[in-house]
Image (tube, rainbow, N blue to C red; front, side, top):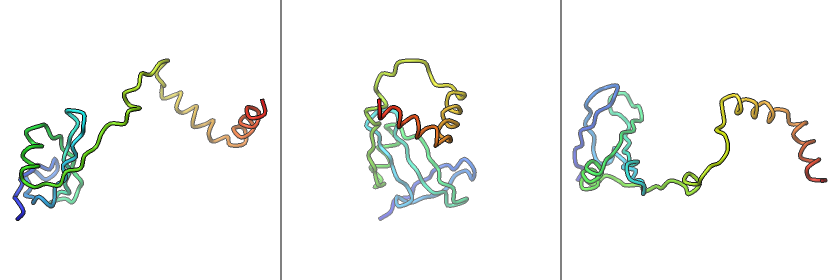
Length: 111
């Protein structure tokens, strides 16, 4: 039996879905869970936040649940200045100079 779920598409408004149309993505870190569905009106993929109340309702209704967690690397302390857009652009330019990059790698390897 598929329960009926009413959700809101930001483009179409209220849409009627079944439990098969919705996936709950529960995060091990509180406040980061969300649910997704493909809108039956416009066919866009929609992502909406799911607090504890919404998660409980969806789970109770029989929606498929996928568990996920934030990688440990995201919680590591980072030191040094924040990268700017210019830093990233300079990095991309340097990467595009493959001959120079390969020569630099050879110099480091032979040191």
